[in-house]
Length: 616
Ligand code: ASP
Image 1 (cartoon, rainbow, N blue to C red):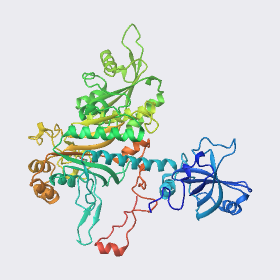
Image 2 (image 1 turned 60 degrees about the vertical axis):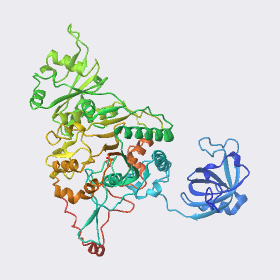
Image 3 (image 1 turned 180 degrees about the horizontal axis):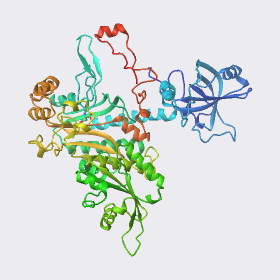
Image 4 (image 1 turned 90 degrees about the horizontal axis):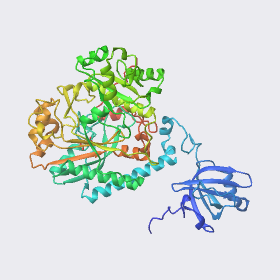
């Protein structure tokens, strides 16, 4: 015996029936999507994973009709009957099975159901709390069911591409030592060794590097990662990566592999041909032009730097910032002169909420008074020289009818502010449509040559406190660029690495790097980060010892599966593509995890939970 196509309880999938089946006796089973009871005759829409079919019960089969009177939505039933063409005028073109119906001879109730918390239909607004509490009902809705199928399809394509190139799937431990990726660890107390704890891996990073030492050469894994950090729409405490590593290879191998992989996924899932290769942008250029290392290239609105234009300015706010070594960064909005005074004020308030002192603005007007240079109308212009006005317009490449916004502060702050404004304005001005299964643009870009370190005081990396002023921009196993290997300690603010990210439409999809494969260089990086040789030995001795036994040059990358599927399905949160996700506060309303632990088990683990801090 082998498995039947629809399970032994059924002969067909509800959504597979059509005019070719007319006259056949079939058995279908599924959930009652809806019921229309006209007394003498009752109609049920029956739903299974293949789709919907209409079932008719009439007095000729009185037991079936009686059962049809009794059933309610979401009951699970099994129907035997004959497929017949629907009468003229009753054909439903919107339904794949709309030309036929099943005339029931028997209806068997397999299970009754409580009234569902919300209708099983797309497009119905339901609070996330209610959706997640009844996720099993939520997942019956077509959109979510489709998202899970797309996810499985993506994984299947990934496996094909990886295996085509000789990568093998190797599992790595979930109960392990901390792997630093810039987040906090989830800890699991070890009962058998009181006073100790496992950490859940933030990534398989250390193990995949040791697999390279082991001679596996090409490793991949659809890996679950755990990071305890503040949640956002595109973050979850546990998430899934395609994790991979390869030996005797460099950046170009990774670029080629990833481009082939993404092209194949987009072709298989969306039937879209991605233009290859993906463009490359250095981190520095991306920050300068877009104010972020995750640029959305579907629209322009590039940032303009006005430090030279305002080098001798009398505009007080700009002068103060420039004298202190900061920057004035501007952004021209095509057609922005139609913004109302109130809208300009709202943007200023928006900037203040992000920590700016304000947000200056100006409108570009036609030249007047015999001049051929357009004019700027703005609360600021009275202090601006003609040369500055001309310089602003030229540097921003602005035209009459545009608006210009100005942000000022430290260079880092001004760029980040204006980069965020760029994204908000593009949304607000309708410059960007959501990309997804129904179309839209796919602008992939490699971001390369990132800095080796970020200033620790701007980081939420939990190791920042001990990091002597700097934290790794990627992770501490990333190779410095060759020209910084000898002296990155002397110029940490300048040093770059051989790391790379893939960004798609403003979303970071993958990060990776060429790794350090020299134990002494690795120790120097740790030392620079404030990890003494003893501490490095204690935390990462197994890696460093491994390096002592012959380590090939190696590199890798890890694309985030949840984000890839989110973009492919046109969703705006990864929660829509994860079967059982957690809320923004890290809870699961269905299982009510995390939950208090019982005293006995805690004692067994040698633990006592501190009481919840009193609020207020
Ligand atoms: N382990 C890194 C991460 O999870 C990715 C990589 O460098 O391969 O972010």
